[in-house]
Image (cartoon, rainbow, N blue to C red):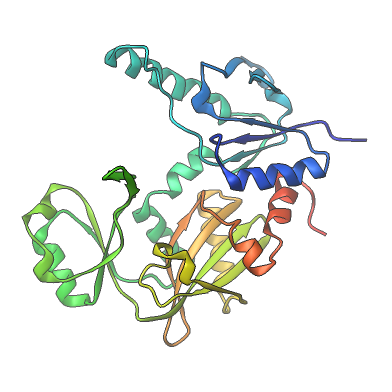
Length: 317
């Protein structure tokens, strides 16, 4: 008998990765309800009642209705933020807060739902210091790292561990001359440090001399490892220079991946490693909502099918 429970996909309108996953689910005759929580209340409405059996009710979009008690899995990608442009600043702040804790709270409490990933777990895992500490606990090699607002501490760390990289702790988008831009990873010397460091928190990390990079995408029980060769400090700055090779992970990496995923409660994770000149893999970060689909056409790895299997809740064969 066909399982009519839908997969709920929460993301923005323009999300090519979600598009390919939804097409795969449609090809399998799996019902899908796609929504952007940021569309509330203009074109998304919610009716949710807390009962003895958990949350009951529905989410309604212009084309779909999702029974909250029947959602089999939720693919949480990149929804937009709530906006209430018609309200003054104070009322808008109140409305945004109510929407966040109302809609967000409902989406986070669906009974019997598999989350890929749960939005609260995504939030936990996005804090770089927490991720680095969890990586050490999992058994990964992690470069010496300093989080500080002290110029003196930064200079001392650089002198001890140089060469050292500056990395943003989180990367909001800037607009520079009308173009989207981000703060890039860069080499930093002790002479670069001035009193401006005291203005906020910064992350400094020892740069490991590398022969390449590896992106590891964990999807449920499956692990996909792709070596990325570029000659760049940060391969994400020029995709045209990248070459891709599927590889097997060294001994101990898969068990460490599972330890890390279990720590944060993640069925999905996009891990970045640098490969040292001696071949050892050094953990850099895990993005719990990272991109992955661009690697499939480059390598032939069946990642979309693996994610659809997970969302379908299909047991591995």
